[in-house]
View 1 (cartoon, helix red, strand yellow):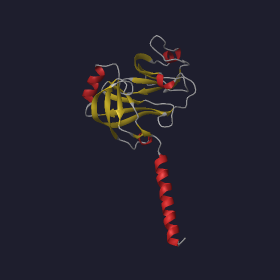
View 2 (cartoon, helix red, strand yellow):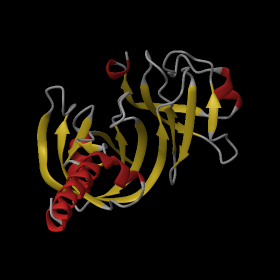
View 3 (cartoon, one colour):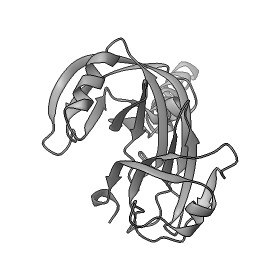
View 4 (cartoon, one colour):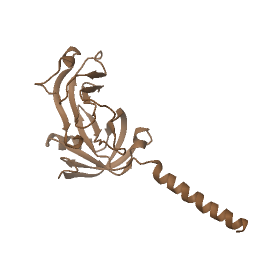
Length: 215
């Protein structure tokens, strides 16, 4: 084999290796659905995670959109709205490299017979409020996230069976950011663990509860 042939063969091999590396380097590309909550003038989105490499992160975002008013009106007239964004890399979102994306807003769960209400809506990522991997083994651990005039209490999804739960609460600035309630089931106004009471965290309302995806 001549020198040129060897170089040509090497170039093809290198190109194929590089293409394969680019294809597998980011396995977080996909449709990353979100639960959507307008809360006191803020648009909050919670990534719907799964126990999989592609979707295995709980991420809470503050979003902005020129269609805030229409989204708020929709939320006021239905128990739950969800967001189906265009396909993107969750890694880029987590790293702060994805500042904008477009999506559809659904009345209901976008994968469970929800109906599209708003199309081609552009969102800007104003702030990332929470980002954690699904590495917990036991249920009962919660994270507290303070917003402008309220707070969110978010269950850290554990090994199956588990649940994704988000509650709006009242909490003072001295309340712990992380608290183990020792509760193996979702908390509620009727089932409010002593550790939350001792921390001065007061139930206001439940925003989201998902069990089906974590059994």
